[in-house]
Length: 285
Ligand SMILES: Nc1ncnc2c1ncn2[C@@H]1O[C@H](COP(=O)(O)OP(=O)(O)OP(=O)(O)O)[C@@H](O)[C@H]1O
Image 1: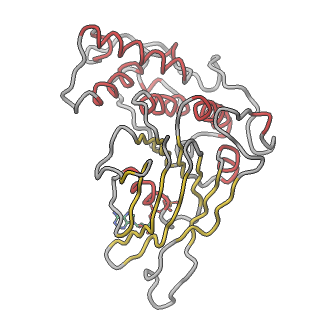
Image 2: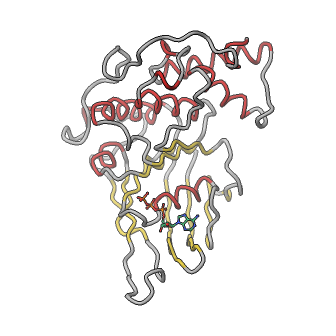
């Protein structure tokens, strides 16, 4: 389960109303796309789901329980900017995520636990198509590969809710097709409810089960900050997509890449394999 309930949510910054009267029921394993004009509050909404921002009014519940006041492992996030650590290898980045989960930045895994963690990290890298690149550093990866690494870092912690803030916005169209296929597969295979902010309508309709459009319905000509955005449109994508039953051939061909997810060398491949890093915790087992 990972149903999200949003009740009468408002967000104001000083006198500025950004969002108002947001009411929403998100079913478990939905894939929600948030679209809308720049500045209408999409990222602010996502940050409230993550607890990086607090609502001015209203509440957010996951499975009927109000969300914790700070980010927790049940909610994972991937941003447009690459969030990987440049001085760690691919494997080191994923393993560090598990070590953080163990209890903050000072946590360390030892012995059998560490071996298990390394195996789990390798399995996750295999899942996102980076198994052959575990010894490389982020600078040696393409943009698409770095975003796959960011996804692996987040998913290794087994979040129930995955929050994506324009995660593929910086990728060129060919690579986006590959990572869309990966995203579709992860949503189908993992037990995830996904909320994704995007400016790309074809991405929204190509991946999501439901598209929510935020917009300011009222404008005060004297006080532009008086009214916030609301959910103006709430569109269920048709034919209906169901997690675990979705397959690329059911989707409108114009909206999605039909290219199968591939780990073969090519445009999304890095240059060279580097040596091992002395400071990489993953490789000190
Ligand atoms: N910490 C903050 N303090 C004050 N104002 C903020 C803060 N964070 C966001 N805002 C304002 O809230 C509004 C909504 O911002 P937000 O980033 O959520 O919009 P968005 O829809 O995600 O925009 P974009 O599509 O351009 O990323 C903007 O006017 C922004 O300036």
